[in-house]
Amino acid sequence: MAAMTFAQKVLSKASGKEAYPGDIVSAKIDLAMSHENAALVLRSFKEIGAKEVWDPEKIVLLFDHRIPANTTKAAEGHQSVRNFVRAEGLPNFYDMREGICHQVLPEKGHVL
Image 1: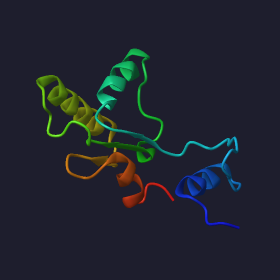
Image 2 (image 1 turned 180 degrees about the vertical axis):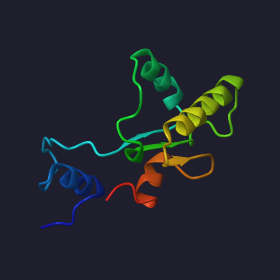
Image 3 (image 1 turned 120 degrees about the vertical axis):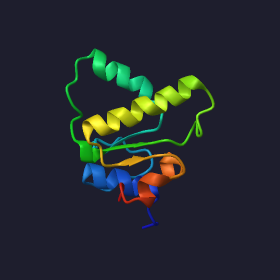
Image 4 (image 1 turned 45 degrees about the vertical axis):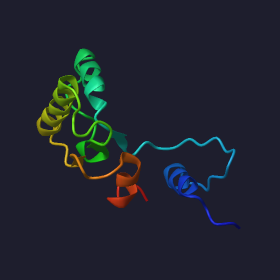
């Protein structure tokens, strides 16, 4: 058998069976990640009346797209995310200079 790709390893772990290219996989969602665009999602979170996140340990937020903030609106979005992180007690928040979101997850041990 050929070595598995990173994606195959993640999907195999999440589905409980080996995943191969072309497979349709039903996987348990065990982690949610967003970058600073989460500021846009926070409005929806409040609008739907959500009281809290489903599991603070399973949410990763980080800044990697607009850093440093290049507009007042971007800076306000950053602050909105930081406030949300504090209010929800999210332990997996990576502020500026921590890395690229898709690299931070495996490098910090959030996947596999």
